[in-house]
Image (cartoon, rainbow, N blue to C red):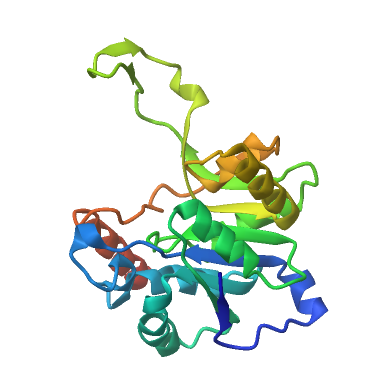
Length: 253
């Protein structure tokens, strides 16, 4: 996997101590369900490309010292031109090439993380509503507890859950108090995530999110309650809600 700098990736040691987290923004989707050849991350939402909202949040977060954008190599120039250069971000930004799976894309972002960073924050480029305050609060929760290997943003489940069989018939109703719905960012120590990736590769384990790799490797990961509006744009029906929330946030700023 290759990485290419947009701005200088050299970071003074004191800057890394003050902002020890490297953000990895994964934007590897093809956008096929949206019919957009540039991928859904470049669709205009509330006046700018979707993914630039997430980049802006990490750019404004005090704990973030570097940003790696993971995207297909053929879309790199478009991402730079449309989603980064017009907005004057101050945090150094580099690129890594997306892989065939989300797990491979995260690995590419981790490999492109500059030396010296202690933590990485993995985030979906299609989650534009993440706030800098949430990023910093979650990162500091991890930074302040040496026993933890990771922090996952999410919320306790408020819906009743059902376990069903292959025909959709209900088998049982579990206690929802033990369930959370999880999102991104998911923040880990670099050491724990590197170890988890190596071990799960040997095991042939394919996780549904990055935290599941660390869990499989025996790491300790804690859920961190974040605002429920941190939704992911997955299908076209998600766009009106996300756009309305972004515009409302701008009007209240």
